[in-house]
Length: 281
Image (cartoon, rainbow, N blue to C red; front, side, top):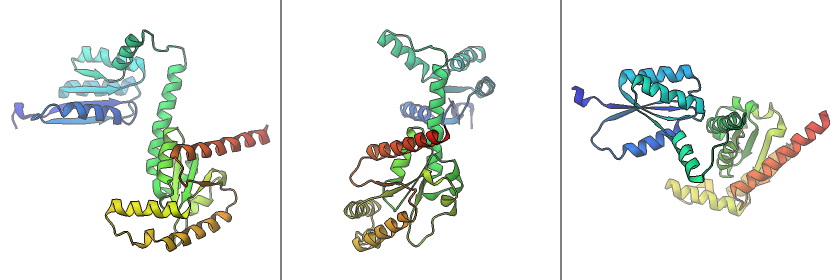
């Protein structure tokens, strides 16, 4: 391969998962056809030492650096290194904040402590989303003890959508599917039972949702998975199972938006936390 055939390099530097920067960079790169580009993503970059290492590597490899960094001091550090090391960079956060400030005719908040509070909230939500993905559909049952909430329910009772929505609110959520013939993981009964939320849905809604799922998968609509009599048996078994665990609040998801159901669960959690504080006060 000649020098002219050497792929261009783009480094993506982020203090979180890098998903935002990757999407923006890829969208921009689609405008340049016939040019081979290799991207390298560096995530959770949160120290000047890490930033310098990456920038020095970018200088050695003649890479363009795209970054999403919340910390203003770190953004300034990248800019100074870009001049020191002659590295081309693009700031996807700082430039937008500056332009917003010009448009609104206002300065961004610089009250001591606020930025760190926002940073903490941002990273908490990112961590919660990653936790929910790794703990979805019964994966990694050892994670249940670290969860803020554990959702249990039959297939298609909104466990995953609820988990993801609550994760974006900053809650670490795991979910466990319930199947009559398969025992629930033992870890479910070894953790604080007040963290468990039992999801239920009415028969007609569950039949409809499962039929829709079969159509999406291109499977025949008469499969046992969506058979009304089978679903009715599953629901009876599920209610009996929940009755053996009275600590679990039963939350009905029938015909409800994810936001509405999540709000009810958060309310229950806060009420329990308030009672616990009152008992220990």
